[in-house]
Length: 225
Image (cartoon, rainbow, N blue to C red; front, side, top):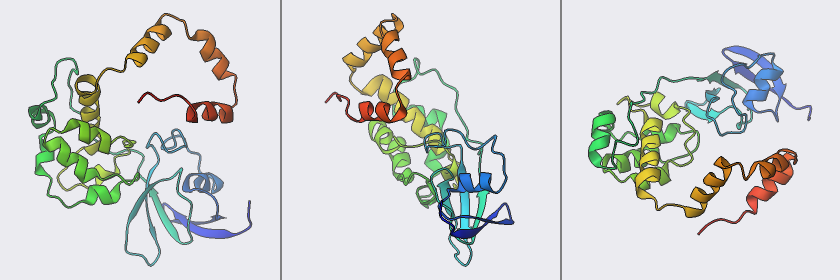
């Protein structure tokens, strides 16, 4: 670890921390015990949504604390939870029509096109665009555009129309996977093999391998065209 230190302000209190730390590890370095808002620590769960501003800069920035390095004179506040509205539905009883969005998430039609959601996205997604796809019932496009969403909720926290963007995207992906995408036969067969216990030995062998080897196997796997 280098000896270069930077000043960060965590919830208004000043700390001096090593410059190569992420916001999350800087908080732990400063003495915070993270029991919430830390999750997977690898950028996949969205639990560590964070808002920050650099002193002298008017722009308010959003990020995931586990992926973003500290900067000098960074003022930090975490957003571990935002109250998204999740509609209740049975995926077996809905259909991929435009009316289902009107019924479950009517607020998307109140979008004013301000693009605050896209600017706030910690994953750099074109959030306003996938909401437009959802409005038109283009669920395959919405699913593709929102695929990397980690449901941190920062987009919704900035939305004047009160849209729960991640939940809209989740419904679109479910509709797409259930009704629009062609069946992946090899996946169906593999699920059946797992349910029948035929993959237990393979799973146990994988669990014994180091993470680096598992990543190598994953990155070089055969992908169905």
